[in-house]
Length: 325
Image (cartoon, rainbow, N blue to C red; front, side):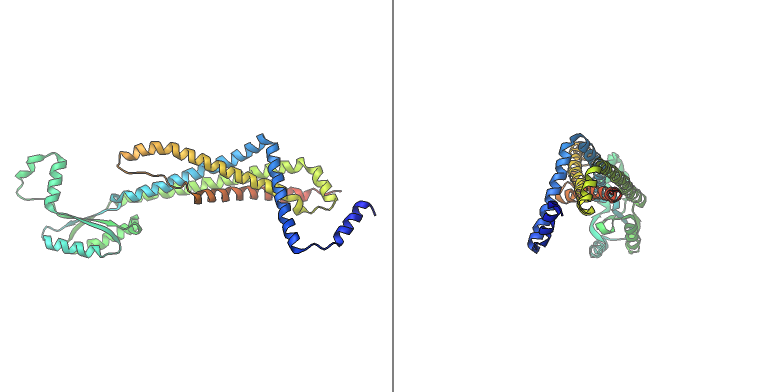
């Protein structure tokens, strides 16, 4: 027996404690993880290209998703979109109108109720129409009193707002109820389509990222084919050989996620300046949300998962195929 195998036999006879095995396990993982990071550092150009592909692939769907989410937040500020106008009957007195307001304020579907008397409606129409004193020649006020009903956010969708409108029309004081359902349906329909496009685009880009990382790891495996053969000849397990390549996928994912986060931040800051000027015309204050710690952790989790998935698929296939003859 050679001295090499004799030393191994003596080492195998020594008992290793559980605590020592625990620390050896983590020490081995840390060593292989740092070694994989060093491999990326030694090939900076190829590594940056792979990291850039992953980062930019995450940037596009992430930016679009944040913009769609902020658009939904803006639509919540446009309460007129789901505001219901109730035109009261001409025979309804002021006291009856106030009783209607009290009843409506108790409804769970309603967030706010406001009342515009026929006199107030005429004054506003006179001021905005430009007719001026021409309206003074009318024998009577043709405008009815109006109750403006703002549903809660839960009942602001087109379907829920339509159901609430039908319910309000049944009140005895109400003559006509009006709600621009078609405008609401178009708005929510566009947002739904935008979300679905973001999801489809994200899936396609994620699939492309997995293939690119898998191909990169495959090339690394072929470049180290001789080294892998030697390791298998001396008894190294497949898990031990595969681990550095899996850590390479981990580092690709982590660095790509950080790159995507920085890129999304810069894009939203750039777009935010133009959006502020545009939304100021509608007297709406826009604060783009989504750039928080939760979003960062989600992006890192997705990018790391993609990196590990690509490396795992490639490693399981190609490392197992390399066997000494």
